[in-house]
Length: 247
Image (cartoon, rainbow, N blue to C red):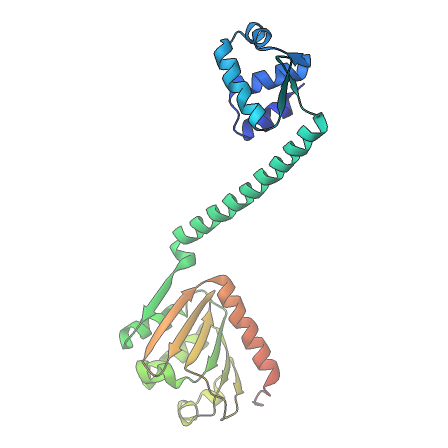
């Protein structure tokens, strides 16, 4: 009969003796310590000690040495409030658990710094693994100067051979023309205004975001799907504002 109430009281942290006392009072209405002790088979000192817990919580009162529950509606209101508080705490704990799990999964939280030609080559090679589209925003010179034109030409050829489409929003630079990127197949090229100032380059691929800095040649690779989605949104918005070059 009181299974749900018993479960609720357990969630509130009451022990078995306290719950037994509460349910006994609920069943009988008014009762003294001796009656509780006989009815439950528990020492009177323990009964008195545990009754004080409910009295302090406002669930029971004593009148003429007999204990009774407070107004049932008030108790239900308190139970409802504590249930809501428990739900809030559960939600908070669940969120904290998800954060802990997120931080323990290296594939989701990984932030890697790349510096130097060998590191850049390793990064660009990884871009060609299991992706359909590579998004780029900025100036290719921020990484071409590091990997070298010869390697970059080879990388572009491999990308094309793997049918990986590149969507570029970039500058009209002599390097781009020298590399022949304007005429490459499987490439969408959009030009930014020459006055547009961008501190390096961003490449998005496979749920990852690579941030290239040209002043100090280095790259930060962030493996985060939400971060990736944000930059894809930026790319789409920028592409909509800039007129693509007809090819």
